[in-house]
Image (cartoon, rainbow, N blue to C red; front, side):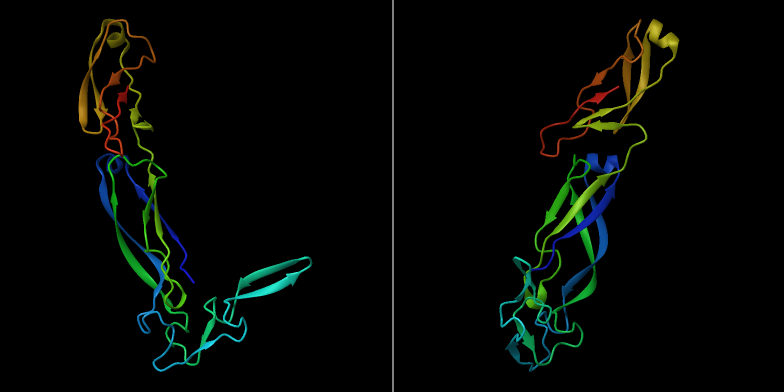
Length: 212
């Protein structure tokens, strides 16, 4: 049968989400047995039709009015048994292995996004196709910025005299400090917009804004 899909959770910083990154990780996975190359059989072993399921790979159980089919426990759904199974994998054709991966994080990726890597999940039983690997990206909360779509928001405290008389202040961005002009008579909770100082759009459609 086919191998299961796998999920790998990856944490990154907001700065890494903004510029893109290449991250490494490692996880345990049922992968193709190196001893028997996934066949599940030792050299010279005979392959026979499973006597339990008669080659169907499934067995049926009656439960009241219903008949429920499940994977045959003797052949693991392959429909075949081996006269001499591989000693390393017990005839399954796969063993638990440690796998390392490199993940390219696209600039502008958002929290909770999924990246799919086809064929890098679990190996199937006795040479069955691999499942897929899904990398779920989690962006850690930032000390200063809150993300809304492609925009970034931050709150900046200023002196009462600056609000009353006006002036200039430094505000943080993902690329260093920027100068912001404060008009005289600025009220509390006034929002200023710095164009194109937010997050890049993950599809390449420009940048969001910074709302201060």
